[in-house]
Amino acid sequence: RVAITAGAYTSREQTVYYAKCLAKDVDRSMDILADILQNPRLEEGAIDRERHVILREMQEVETNLQEVIFDHLHAVAYQGTPLSFNILGPTENIKSINRADLLEYINLHYQPHQIYLAAAGGVDHAELVKLAEKHFGDMHTSHVSEVEYPPARYTGSEMNHRDDAMGLCHFALAVEGCSWTNPDYFALMIANTLVGSWNRAQGGGKLIPSPFARKAFEQKYPQSYMSFNTCYKDTGLWGVYGVSEPDEDAVRKFVGAVQSEWRRITRGASPGEVQRAKNHLKTLMLAQCDGSTAVCEDIGRQMLTYGRRIPLAEIDARIEAVTPSVLKKVMEEYVYDRDPVIIGLGATEGLPDQLLVKFQQSSPLD
Image 1 (tube, helix red, strand yellow):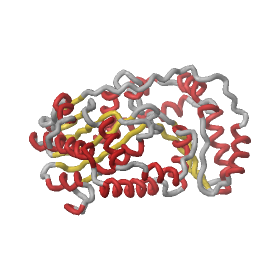
Image 2: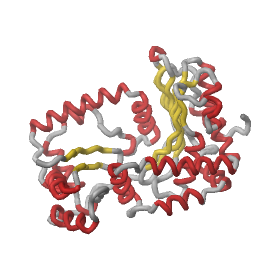
Image 3: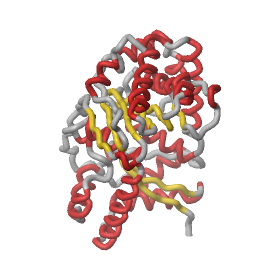
Image 4: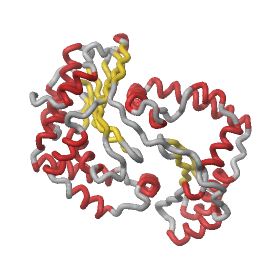
């Protein structure tokens, strides 16, 4: 008997199989993962059970309005490209997928040149290499995947689904960001940190470090907001997700305030602000790697995106290299006068249309 927690999850670009175990059970855990990847049974009964699980997950996702907003954001921003699809896929595909479809997908994509093995915690690297050779050494690339992945094509546009009965206005406002490996990644992360996040339920009031969070606190109608910087292989989305009371004028002012903050950062944030954001970003990145599970996920993601693990000293140096002038240049390139995507859901009567938002993106007035 061994104590192992195993599972899997999928993002828009990656699929992860993982196992957590005691140090003495690493061999057995890798044996299980190798068997899952190389000898899947895919029994019809198991497929049907999982089909119902996915359909229930889809219903749960539809109740999470933030998830719904981000699915619509991708569908509109990357319309006509694979990145527009949500992770679960359309209901008709879930209901019709069968064993032959799954085997075809596995044979096409689960090739050795597309797989990375990462581990963290009580495991020796040399021993891990031996175990990888033992359990995965018989895998051979039967063919190089013939699937062509078209580059993601960003389109500035809008989607507004008005339903006043929902009681609140949920919106996302974004521009095209950069990929994981782009040199501007850390500058956009610092800009993202400068905008920050806020929820009316949290404390702090006027003592909140972020200037925009203080402004949101002083207004009556904003309920929360969250800045984001979502990166992919060849593109990204940089913006803000917000929730507001349904007052028509308040929603318009909230969106306008977001853009006003973007313009303020574009004109030039103070050196003190930028240094505070850099320190905060370092703290967040270190906190995200707290524990062997998070470290393992970070290793796998960096191997898939960079082809190597970036040392903490290098990350620190890249963050410190972002000066106020560098930040200003990057904001001018990615945010100022760029085509935005705006998504609205709920009581969206006061949500401005995309043309007005684009005009305000370059307005010199605040």
